[in-house]
Image 1 (tube, helix red, strand yellow):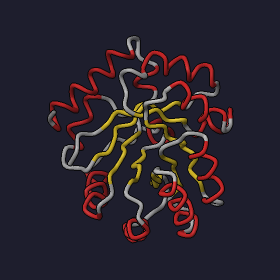
Image 2: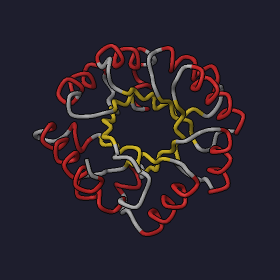
Image 3: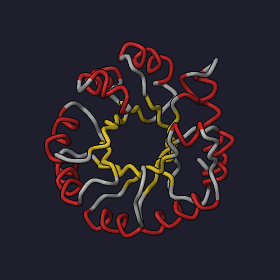
Length: 217
């Protein structure tokens, strides 16, 4: 398994505020995500603006696409995204069309595992050529006190065994990372843990230090 990357999630309601945090953190992260809230508020220009600001970073359009996979993928990748998210409830036809556009433009689709999904769904995505998924503990689940548990880790391991690389998100801190050492982790996604920190770059360094300690150089 390769060493996980660090992703900055920008779920701001203002592009200006998001770009401010990017200025503070772009030298300390590997991936910059135009989060769903930012994209719903600011639209496609948010993806273009982040690509312009971060020409050498992986840019994610976290659109959680449920339909019109081809059209929305064309817009996302043409705006400069490298990866685009599709919600796990989307029909296979939507995944297939979005994935075809991603491949044609040198990008990737990430399946957002939010809500109800099965390992059979995951196998179907893998057969279509998708190689990434996002294991998500949502804001509402965090607020209700839901913690990472053995059931989560077992499902992640099963997804890894299928061949999917996982980006893990949901209140992740550096102290959480040892939990996921047996998982095929593509990236750890942090939003408020980075952007709301008193010293954002220091927290990013703590993430990287943990990643290197657990996964090697």
